[in-house]
Amino acid sequence: MNELNRCVNFELMGNLLRTVSGTKDIYRTDSLHFTDMFFDTINGLLLLCTKDRHVYTLMTDGTQLTDRGTLTGKVTPGFASWEDGVLIASGGKLQYWNGAELVAIEASPDVCNGVFVSHGRVIVYYDDVIHYSAVGDETNWTEDSNDDSSSKWLQVGYKDGGKITAVVNLSADIIAFKSNNTAFHIAGQYPDWAQREISRNISNRSWRTALALTNSAVVLGDNSLQALSTTDDYGEIKASDLGVKVQDNIKALPSSMKLRYVAPLNQLWLISGERRFLFMDVARGAFFMREYNSPAVDVCYRRETVFVLKDNAVCYLDNGMDIHDDGEPLRWEMYCKTIVSYNDYLVKRGRVDITPLFQTYAYVNYYVGHVLYSELVPKEALQIWHDYTQIYHSKRGIKGKPIANIYTNGDEIYDNDYEIYGNTTYLKSTAYVRQSKRQLDRHKAIKTYGKGSGGRFILNLISYDVAEV
Image 1: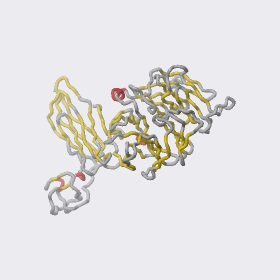
Image 2: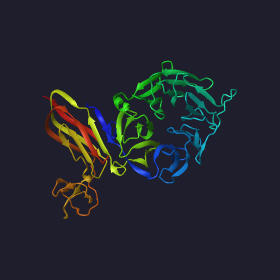
Image 3: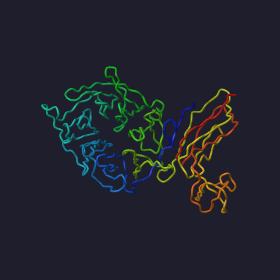
Image 4: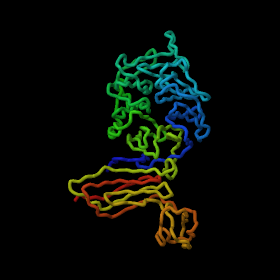
């Protein structure tokens, strides 16, 4: 069994590969430049931030874009759902979008680099300090030593020289990551909390590259993507490297990154602000790449709908027959690992089998060695060409729009009793398209790969018979 070496614009569907969804715009602008996005589940709105630090709300149908105010800080904003809306931390005073207006919480710490919610408290951090609001009150940041439910603070890693770069939940506890590559486990609640250093070798690349995922805390570092999870061994924390096979790709990522979990797809997206970026299938731990026609800068979701943010547009993933982005076809490619022989390989037969999900013409080409398997498209994607007379006894319709050519008297027009000219019905749908070739192709190395664009399909099989000679 061969292994993929590079796979762009594919994702897993069970045990098979499927081309990813394209995008469709819900909003596009020539005057704004978007940077960040979060879905407000309470009010059913998209929160959008721009390069000039403004915060907008947008309905999910792309209507009613409204300017709600300006961020108080200058770092990449972090978001957390809370009560009537969303809390926002961007390096200044904590802000609260309450469904009606964006307000600064004046009693909050002057610098809030991140925010999340745990056990009824709002938690923010800066420098080496974690601040906890009073229980159930985002506006109360006054400490009272006689009241355990009042605001509290905790210094993490006393005088170790590191600054907190991220804090995430791990089950009922908290993991804090610092700029000196240390990580701390904070267990329990005040006054019974306890902190313990768990590693001096876990880096966090930027403000938004750590998140909670089921029973793990996932962090994108300088050279790795690691998952921290609890074990049964005396409450220890175990770290595992999820990105061993893509370590070189991770090293090449820019410093300003976003790590996002896309629940409807069960995927982790490593968003770099570039056209091509890594993503991981969480169930299998397999890495792929997405490549859009313009850079994606953020992603969020509402139930089963996934929203993708571009510099000048808000889109959603379209599960239709074709894969387009910015109005142009998306390209896909996949390369299997090259098989090398000490002698020669003789490829005697090859087969490519797909399930097409498209009905218009798309480019689907595969190579096994030097042999091309081309035009892997369903019959409904083809069209009769240059015949305006009636051809008799067909049981299927002919599509009238020119896409690709089938010349007169080919197998596709045998037994047809429809007029070809001007007909807008479709040929009978094809459940799968299979192309098998006998071949004599001799090499020291066999390269298997595919390239194409435009149509969604499921890759069922690539196989070939080979002998070493």
